[in-house]
Structure formats: structure tokens, C-alpha cells
Image (cartoon, rainbow, N blue to C red; front, side):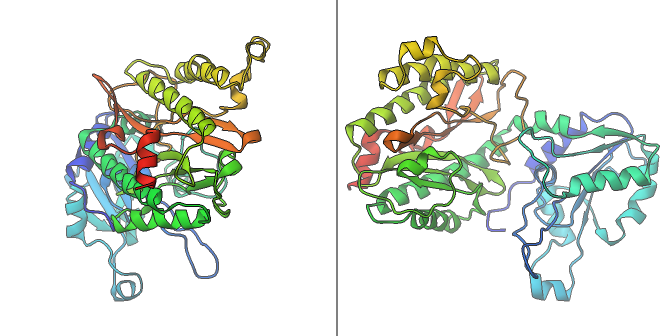
Length: 432
């Protein structure tokens, strides 16, 4: 792994939190993700399943975590099944966990090889009354390809049809959404690398550079600071391309007079950051660009204040749109009071220029799991990312910071490290 090994206390604590939610005499089983075929004999870069990583810290394919707190056989109350390395694997694929290293990473003492998983685990499962299994229940998920969690559920249900099955994901959604101090520190590390990347491109961008060159500068800075890479496909969108919300082609020249919108995140130790900035290609905002930018910044600052324990996310989205953004759009001359008065309530007038939500959960996944229909609580981490998109003017501005909810109010983790945001800060760096 590129990143520094995390303290296994994080994963030990996480397992204890999950085990405290389990019913008596229950077993829980978690699998790593598949390695997916690219083409020919090549595979996509492996990305660990978020649940098994959150519970164990193990970042390797073909891994299985078993938790059975009430097991009569003590060594199976917590155990890991891992791929056993050999000389061929070592030569062709490099290092795999030893049993000793897996214990050091995870805090789990009982490490077994996975070549006889069912032979070892079947008698253990037979002692349990219930089996907890996870599925991808992220409400943004669209099932398009096979995935290990679902395939394992179908397999184990065939092998043990008389057991009672429980959904692990309903518990993990709540648990993972509340970050402890260890997790927040890793997210801070990810955000710190993101700042370095942003400051690098502020010094690099000028008329005539290409969007893909900016993307290359970012990944250079991320990797050299031990990140795994991007936490999602980056958006590097100049001019009117910034009005395409999921623009990822990144193949146009950045022109004099354009704004450049960059939406990217860092994956450090499998924890994400998520940053969006917009800045002038030539280093100076025009008056119109500055007015739009400051309007978005004002909405972001006011929206951040609402990210406090007890806030309902769906109500928050409506307040940001109708009470904060609507006023700014009127002041910019983009909406009239008549348009607002005659709007379709199901698609308010402001959505012509601000059509997406303002915040999402963030953590191990950039769009992390969380309880969208329950009150926000201390320990949640959210993005805050309002935007204004004026296609007819070729102007798209979105600004995004990462916010930790605390009992004392919102803590902006990007402001905390002075990530450039104000117009004057950006222009000063670009023209230094």
C-alpha cells in the first residue's frame, strides 16, 4: 500500500461497535470485492470493499472476515481468512499479507488461509442461529454487474437454508456515518493532499493548457503524497463544459476568459476527500465571474451553518435552494419574482441554475452511506457544494468543502487548513 499503515485501534473499535448491534448467537461474514476483468489478461485496479475495510483494515483481494461474538470456540469469535501467498504469487504479483502482518494491521489474532474456507467455517456456522450479511444498500447504487456480496448471499442461503438471515448494512450505514477521531484524522490527511493538488494547479493553469494536463498535475501531486489516487473520476471543465455536472472527458483547451471548474477527491488509506473549485484560466476574474462566484460562496457559507445535529437532510436541501440560492439568483438577474411566483412546485425556478443537491455523506466512500431520513448527528461528515450554472454565458461555478458536524457546530475541515477559497486568495496565488 502507498499509504502509511493505520493504527489497528480504529478497526478494533469499529468491530466492537458492530458486534454490539448483533443479536445473541449470531455470526457475520464479510467479503472483499472481486477483481474485475479489464480486457485480455488484464484486471482493473483492485478496490477493497468498504465494509470489510472499515471492520478490519485489510486491503487485499480474496479476504473474508468472520465475527461470531458468542461462538463456543473462542478463536472464531473474530477471524480472517486470507489468500496464502507462494513463490509464484510473490514473483508475479508481489507482497501479500503474512499472518503476522494481518494481525498487526487488523488487531485480529486468528488468521487462516482461505483455501478451505467452507470446510472450516461450515461447522461454525451451524452453531449460530442467525447470519448477518451485507449488501450494497447505498441509495445511489445501481446494480449493473455481479458483485461478491450478492453472490455470497445466494451461495450461503443455498448451503444453510434453515438459518435466519439478518441485514448487516442497516447497522453499518448508521455506524459508518458517525466518524470517530481516528477516521477524522485520516480524512484530514486526504484533504491536506487535496490542498496541495489545488495549489499546484493554481500555479500551473494559464490560457492554452489542456484540461487533461490539469488532471495530470493533480494526480502527480496526489500520488507523490502517498494517496491511492483519485476518490472518483475527476471533473476538469473549462468554459461551458462546467455546466455539464458529470463532465469527465477533460479534453478541451482552457481559453483566456474562461473559468475552470475542478471537482476532484483524494483516496488516502481508502478514505475520501471531495473538493470543488472554480477559478479564472487567465488568473483574473471578470466582474460577472466574480459576482457569480461570490454568490455561490455566500450560499456555501450560509448552508454550512445549517449542518448541525438535528438538521434533516431533505429539509436542508429545500432551505438552501428556496431561501439561500433563490435570493442570489434574483440578485444576479437570472430569475425574476414572476418566474418564482409562477414556478412548478415540483421543480422550483431556482433549479434552472442550481439543479443538484447541496450535501452528501462522505467517508470511506466519497458518496458514503448514511441515514438520509434521520437527523444529522455529531460525527457525520458532509460535503457542502452549491453551484450556479449559466449555460448561455458559459459560466459554471461550484464550490465544495468538507464539513464535520460537532456538538459545537460545523467544523469546516478545508477552512481548518486554509485551503484557498476567496477570490483574492486565488488571484494572489495565480499571479505570484
